[in-house]
Length: 183
Image 1 (cartoon, rainbow, N blue to C red):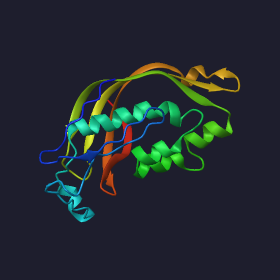
Image 2 (cartoon, one colour; image 1 turned 120 degrees about the vertical axis):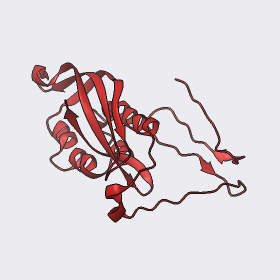
Image 3 (cartoon, rainbow, N blue to C red; image 1 turned 135 degrees about the vertical axis):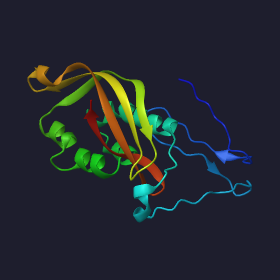
Image 4 (spheres, helix red, strand yellow; image 1 turned 180 degrees about the vertical axis):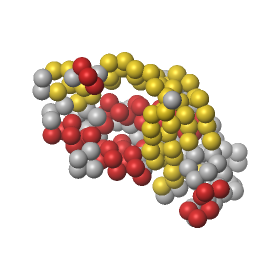
């Protein structure tokens, strides 16, 4: 792992939180004595259809990478849905955590996913215009669905797919809103 830390221009001190173990998202917080111009965000949804959003391709890619890093903890014991709260909103959050969603199905059926690898091969497209920014990526993944009768061969193995991830701000923080497989 490589950790690179840089302070925004004009910030002399800030708090940085780092932990090993459960995936956590920490944000550098400028202290009051720093002279920083803070840009406010207008979260008025009526302007979103033609909005230019402030998420960068790098930020979008990092968010999706965090999602893939969290999947082994979300879709296997201990089924950490708190990670879904940190990384997802909207349709993805609702689908993943609902009473008849995938996490609850895995729990009820004594099943879990084992991820041998998840690798984002390349970024195919990125846009910050429109209602929701998105990133289109090619992902290779090898996963195995374990159940009461062993590995489910129909829902296991290696694959490479193109996926598009949509983002939305929740309380000023970018999260994954939804995703789907594309050609």
